[in-house]
Image (cartoon, rainbow, N blue to C red):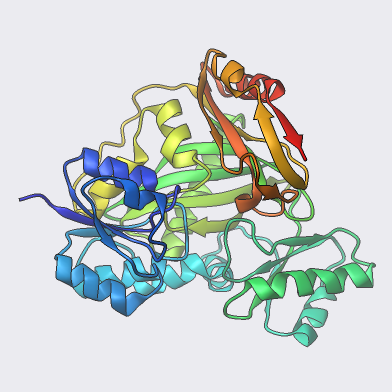
Amino acid sequence: MNKKIMILGASILQLPAIEKAKEMGLDVVVVDMNPKAIGFEVPEIKKEIISTIDVPAIIEAAKRHQIDGIMTLATDMPMRSVAAVAEQMGLVGIDKDTAVKATNKAEMRKALQKARVPIPKFFVVSNEEEYKEAVKAFDVPFIVKPADSSGSRGIFEVIDITNAELVKKAYEYCKPYSKVGDVVVEEYMNGPEVSVETLTINGVCHVIQITDKLTTGAPHYVEMGHSQPTKHSDEIASRIAEIAKEANKAIGIKNGPSHTEIIVTSQGPKVVELGARLGGDNITTHLVPLSTGVNMVECCIKIALGEMPDIKHKWSRGSAIRYFEQQAGIIESIQGIDKAKRIPGIQQISIVHGAGERITEIESSGSRMGFVIAQSSDAESAIKICTDALALITTNYL
C-alpha cells in the first residue's frame, strides 16, 4: 500500500512537490481553496478545496485520508496548519511554537535575540504612537515591515529619516499587510544578501547551499535574481552557514527544511529572517538541483514521511535565475523567447504575466512578469547566460 502525503497549496510554487510526490509513487492529497489552481491539474491526485490556513478543516481531511506525512513549499501561510496536523497525528514536522516563530517576524526576532543570533536592532509596534516612539531610536535609515507577511509584501525603507512625510507613509503602507496588526521597525543593514538552504534531520542541521541574492533595493526590496554557489570567501561562507544553523536551533526546527536570509554587514553576517520551509523563487526547486544535484523537494517529502533523504552533493556547478525588467502598463506582446531559449545553458524561460495582462512596476514578488534560469560551470557564467537571454527578449506595451 502506497504512503500518503498531504501537500498544502496547489499554486505554481507547490507544483514541483506535487509532481515529485506522484513521481515517487505516493498517494497525494492536495489542499487549496482555489479549485482552478494549477496543482489540481496533476493527474490522479486527491483534491481538497480548503483554505491552507483553515486548521480544523485540514486536520479533519488529514485524518479522513489517514495521511503519513504533511508539507508545504515556498510559502509561510500554511506552516501553522502543517504543525497542527503533525502534532495531532504524530507525524514528522515542526511544532506549533516553531510555526509561530517562523511565521511571525516579531516572535522570530525575539527568539533569535534570546539565543544571541546576530540580528539588526528592532522594535515591534502595534499602533502609530508606538511607531513614532520607535522611530526616535534610529539615527540611520530603517526598514518597516509587517510582522506576518511574506513575498516582499508591505516592506518599506526609510532612507531619509528627517523626512516626516516619508516616515509616516512607511507605516501607512506597511500596516494593512499585517493580519495581526503588528509592525516591525528595524535598522537598515547595508551589505550583500544571501539565503541559506538547509535540511534538518533528527536535530542535525545540514547546509545544502548558500545563494547570492539580487534585489530591486529601496523601497520594496523585491528579489530580482539568485545565483549559486555564493561568491563570498570560504571564511565568510563558513560564518554564514554557522549563523544559519544557530538560527534554526533558536527557532526550534528538528526535522525539515529552512530558508534563512542573511545580510553580510561590515560587522559580520546578520539574520534578516528565517522560513521553516523550502525557499521560493525557484531557489530550491531549480537552482539547488542544478548546482549540487541534491533534489531538495524529494528530500523534504522523505523527511515528512519519516524516511532518510539523500543529501549528498552529486556535483558542483553554477546556477542562476534572473527576472524580467518591466514597466507599468498592458502587455501587447513578448518577443524573442524562442531565440533566447536556444542559448546554451538556458534551462527554462517562464512568463508569469503575458499578452493582454495589465502589470504594475515591481512592488512585490507576485508582480514580476517572468524569469530565465541557467546552468553553467560557475555562478558568474550562469548569470551571464541569463543576462544574454534577457537581452534578446522584448516586451511591447499597448
